[in-house]
Image 1 (tube, rainbow, N blue to C red):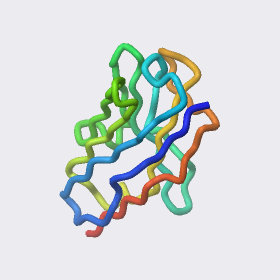
Image 2: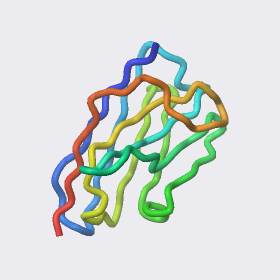
Image 3: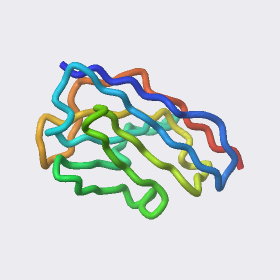
Image 4: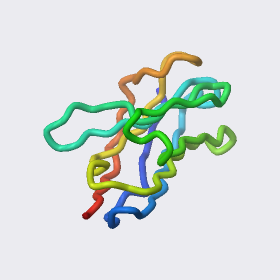
Length: 120
């Protein structure tokens, strides 16, 4: 089972940027799809960005053009570059692995997440 630790969250003003990191160990990150998820107060957890083993990506419409997901297989790390942040992006962000190479869906590997707060 992979172990995941998220970091990089914080408090920023609208229009600012953050870079989230997810460190993985004890797994096979390099061949699995991965994703960043978020959960805002009163809302259901949602997929915001995903990346497959071949490097192809997908994004929620709400973040497309502002967020970029990437992976470093050698370091077993996943990243989310978040630009032009909006108050609506405020949430706890989680990374997760998928049991598949080409289908992005979460496994039960949730970490503690990292809080992102965007002020207006």
